[in-house]
Amino acid sequence: MSSEVTAPRMGRFVFLSIHLFLGSLIVLAGILAVSLGLQNIEGTNIDPLGGSIILISAIISIYIGVKRLHDLDYCGWWYLVFLLPLIGNILWLLLFFVPGTYGANRYGEATAKPSKIYSVMLYGSLIFLIAIIVSYVSLMPGEVVTLKVTQ
Image 1 (cartoon, helix red, strand yellow):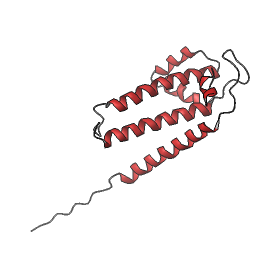
Image 2 (cartoon, helix red, strand yellow):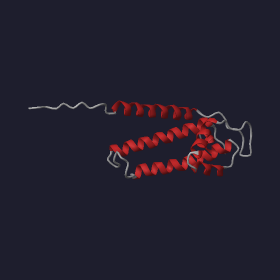
Image 3 (tube, one colour):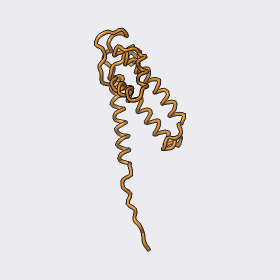
Image 4 (cartoon, one colour):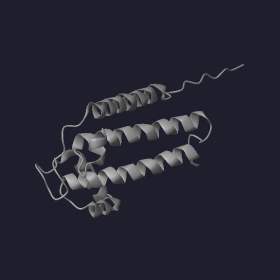
């Protein structure tokens, strides 16, 4: 795992795996914060646990985003484009789909086949997020039928 993280380039699969894992951690931190009473359901205050996980996730996201740009043979400063509304979101999504350059580029050799830990991260995060969505949908209140009692 360390060779993929310390390499100057990062492929799509590793990039997606880490992003889904970080998203799962943020969702889990939000669920824990609400269930422990650290944050209300409206999210008007940020608890220290959630805030620190979001900050750490943002730093990791920038780090792997720059590595993914290196895989596409772009300078890491292009990451600042992602701060632009709408255009940045579209370009950020392209990082998941556009393949990196084949062979060596100015940032190093091509990425090797990722280790199995990234498959576990990807599929574990997908299962967790799908379970959260299914449980949320199943717990959504339906139509409430009220009965009026007349005397």
